[in-house]
Image 1 (cartoon, rainbow, N blue to C red):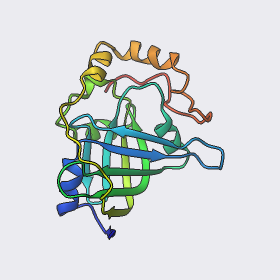
Image 2 (cartoon, helix red, strand yellow):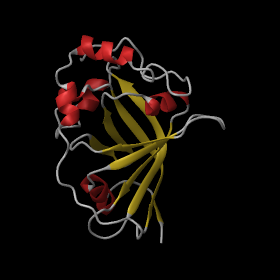
Image 3 (cartoon, one colour):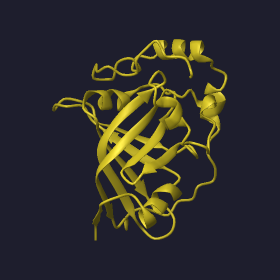
Image 4 (tube, one colour):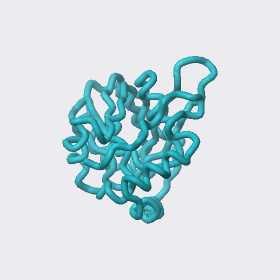
Length: 194
């Protein structure tokens, strides 16, 4: 049923790029940490950079668990499910890193995301994932679901923020600078948009 792939190309790449939603999973080191699972899916916020590297835009929110876990240990799994068409599930297991606004690589990485204007979403970082294991499975248990539209609530909420007010918002949130488990999260103060 399942197959392991050497790279993200051809049919596999097409499948990943066509999905409207994907999920990220991370966890801290140790037995007592909180596993984090997050849905992602604003149109244009995901990109395949090369056959072994993918990236997505990390936008403003009320916590920074993925960033904290990646800063601690780098482990991440991304998953896509076919909600339309033939059943399929693809997982990319790998090492990820948050590339923050003050990193020299940031402007070039943001340039890969031409299908979205990140300025209206409180862009915090670009999450870059280097694939170590790429697998698919059948997806027979995944239901059919349709995509009606992206919600505009995130953009409407954060487009009114400038760098200073976004930084103030992050300082007010309990789990931005520190994760639920107390790990370093988003570095604050927030660097200005390059």
